[in-house]
Amino acid sequence: MKKNSLLFTLLLAGITTFSQVIDKNAEDIIKEVTTKMQSYETIRIEFTYILENKDENIKESKSGSIYIQSDKYRLYINDQLLISDGKTQWAYTKDINEVQIYEVDPEDEYTPMKMLTGSAENFRPKLIREVAEGGKTVQIVDLTPVEPQSFYKIRLEIDKNEKSIISSAIYDKEGTTFTYKVDKFHENPKIHPSRFTFSHANYPGVIVTDMR
Image (cartoon, rainbow, N blue to C red):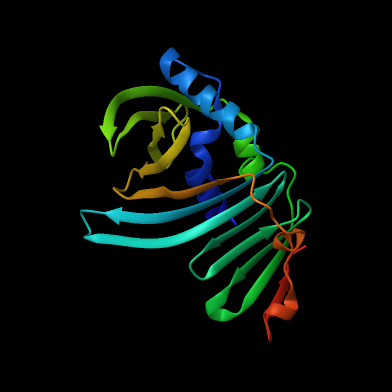
């Protein structure tokens, strides 16, 4: 499940409130983005995930999407599906037709809603620069962990006018970069309740591994 937590960290790191601040401009930017995100009842994000390591000549790209409503979510990325209704979590892998079922951990800090509305004290944000890109003013903000981590920074690209995240990337100490680029952002879409449960009938022959 740590892999799924990393997915949430990468995708949603840019919309969390960061308390330990050394850059007032960066603090204001993050607060504006957070306030806007908290105003939505539902969210749908379509994204591209890129894994790159130039030293090893590796570059992989995958597409995905996530639906969020309160503490419920549904995350697609290639052949993987992660669903939670707030109490139960289902992790489905298509190539082996298996679903693993977990009880939601109330202490998990990496669920989408906690990432959206929580307060983290583990990063220091810094505004690097503003650039013009595709008719937009893009603010580049780096988040540096206070305590040693397997990565040394998260870089956010933020649309200054829209107060929205364009991309979120994590740079690990082994030379690999994990990037999520937001392709489409849907504000308050209608989401059917069935999106937040796993229907076994839709996956004939599915192998069920109950980890609760």
